Amino acid sequence: MLGRGAARALGALRGLRGGAPPARSLGLSRRLLSFKKVLDKDHFLPKPCWGKDMRRLFDQFTKKCEDGSWIQLPSYEHISSQRSQDFSAFIHAYFPSASEVINEKLSQAQLFTRGFEDGMGFEYVMFYNEAEKRIVCVFQGGPHLQGMPGFFHGGATATIIDATVGMNAIVSGGIVMTANLNINFKSPIPLCSTVLVNSQLDKIEGRKLFVSCKVQSIDEKILYTEATKINFPPMHHLFAGMMGERSRRKIINNLNQ
Amino acid sequence: MLGRGAARALGALRGLRGGAPPARSLGLSRRLLSFKKVLDKDHFLPKPCWGKDMRRLFDQFTKKCEDGSWIQLPSYEHISSQRSQDFSAFIHAYFPSASEVINEKLSQAQLFTRGFEDGMGFEYVMFYNEAEKRIVCVFQGGPHLQGMPGFFHGGATATIIDATVGMNAIVSGGIVMTANLNINFKSPIPLCSTVLVNSQLDKIEGRKLFVSCKVQSIDEKILYTEATKINFPPMHHLFAGMMGERSRRKIINNLNQ
Image (cartoon, rainbow over all chains, first blue to last red):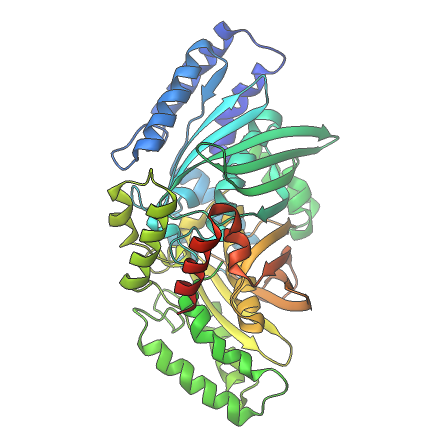
């Protein structure tokens, strides 16, 4: 599940569908650049903690962006304090047991994949190919993502998959939430290695978006993990069980502002 | 996927199967206590960052442990430096592109769910019921686990599920690795809330262990997420595609020491 901040900014990308010419893509790239300026920190720019493989792949895909066939996607770290307050009010309204501690903690909210020191957790950069409806995420996992000693935790692998296929669904179909995530772990991924997360929009059936994903070694010779994900665009469907109709509408209106 | 350090210590628990009397369970509890002493930090003891719900549920389940029907499971944060070096050697042998940076980073290896400041990430405690072959994990998620603003990231939910069902499989069947994790997200989980992760060993078929899981509100009225997980005990099965037979044997021997 990805944040709405990124989702809103990426809404523009959907205009690319239907074989957009390179010139138009470059226009969108410029809009994305202006969006990047309002972010607290852009994690999609090279950092000193990136290893050789990560830098090399970043350079390769950045070069592919020059003709507009690929677009580098932005990232973010925090949500705005206003949106944090909106959600805090929502949580208090529907979860009366929530204490004041929650209010205080929500002000510290941070995207899960960005809550680590540089190089210790998730270092990744995503590139989108509109014609092929796919995302390549170059991912370097840090030493704080360990499960079995020397290898990534299954939850860390699930997280980078969720982030990548979620972004693919958002770029291709708008605001979505994950309905199902099915992961086959083929081979453990060595800690601190850099891998490719290849995500592909397979089909859209009614309101469902089907996205598949492969996590591979950078030479694509080792298939570490395969996954499929189903997304539903309407957020209210998922909230439906938690609140009455009137309250639900209010939340949806707030979300759509 | 869970670390072997915890797995080895928990191996003793498997002796409980077959209707062990309370007296024997208490003996095992003492052994677990001695194991806790060698851990860098025991995250399964109450902390100031725990909220009221987390503390109340911890007290409830701790009380249930008094007659031996439930056992509180230990946790850990780091692996030993020796084991870290073993795995570092393994990674260098099979991934020649790995640089010296990796060696340095492996010394900083940390369990994924413990790489956060207190209260910011995963706060959880697990209790095991041998007769029912199930684990209840009381989980309080911090503000650094955010996906959609105000709610947990799908990857964070997947992580606590993976940790809980992985532990259930280890306690019930020995060393395992995840083969498949299938998650249905029913409703988003509000950030900073405390939930129950109920995991159950459903069946063992040959080498496969089938475990299911539900993430629910603490009053069990809201079902947030359902999941199934299939585990394979033999680690060499998963390594098979990565190396030759001789090297594989060497690694397995090291792991079994």
